[in-house]
Amino acid sequence: MATPYIGRDDALAFIIEQRSPEIIEMATQQSVALQTFRQIPIGTSVARFSLADTFPTAQWLAATPPDDVDIATKPVTEMRWTTKDVLIEEAATVVVIPENVLDDAEINLWNEVQSKAAEAVACLIDQACFFGTAPSGPFPASFPVGGIVGRAIAANHSYEWGTVTSTEDLAEAWNQTMALTEADGYDVNQSYASRGIRASLRGLRDANGTPLYVTNLAGGGPTDSMYGVPINYVTNGTWDPTRALAVMGDAQMAVILMRQRLTAKRLDQAVVGDINLPMQDALGLRLKIRLGFTVMAPKGRPGTQTANPFPFSVLEPKTAVAASGATMGSPGTFTPAGGELPATLAGMTGITATPGTAWTSGSYVVLGDGSFANWNATAWVAGKRP
Image (cartoon, rainbow, N blue to C red):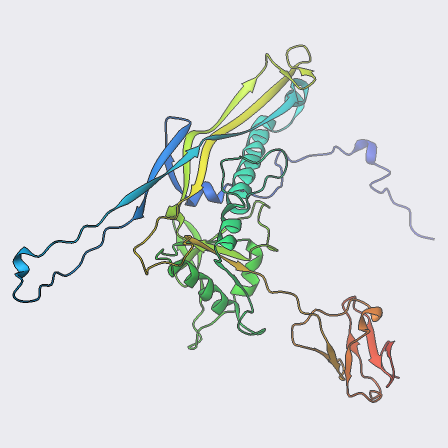
């Protein structure tokens, strides 16, 4: 018989629960667009930009004797500009908190709510600028359709990883994507991606074994770069890796017109939805920001740009290739290398076995769900070959 003892459950009435006043959470995520794009403060609701549309040309003068070159007719050229209007849009959010909840909280709940509300606005801005979408509600009509990613793809400024060969490394795909921007006369000075791409970047080396992906300490913190260009990680959950592994280009051409920076206002004499703040002892936190966004694509001189110039390019993910063959082994391998594995035994239908005769004892391949399969000379069966 076990020796009796007084356990935690027995003494629960006397144990005082101590709760930490800190909230353990992810670091507040800010807007990468606001941090890296060019910002221009304006004082109106509409801004008008002038862009060069036609450049002047020059010619050598020539005269055939007895004509005098000194009085030869000079060529006439022209130069034109176009205008681009950018409208100011407003983003906002309101959070309601009962006063009793604020009074009873062991932390400064008001500051915590304000921080997370500001993060929600940051997510809204990044999603609109990069992907041209909004998680809920309307999308600003004056913002570029499709965002930077959609505009770049429409301008044929997208490169799919694995275009050259299925084994193409990410470094070369990154290089080819940068080249699309440079072909239009723009410099690639910033790149953007989700932090999930780091695993594919860390092992990249040049012919001499020198890492291509480098982390430097700058500005008091680590800065990652590829081919010397900083990589900005969009870590607020708005990045869609199925549409773009990375975006790179000239960040000075992505322009945010700041009419009013993010401001917070405490509400106590208002009706928010169906809650009357003063009558129901609640407070409201309203955050709002007013800005415009556009991507400038100024024309260069003839011959220096593609037919549809754009200052950003998109690195698209590889197209998934399903495995088509399986080679005997312990375990065996699927072909082509890197192909998508069949998830279950049913998915082995159509997979060519090598060799086509019955596999030797102990041979098998591992399926996507972790189970085994082997070839018995006529069909795929579960488990290792007996």
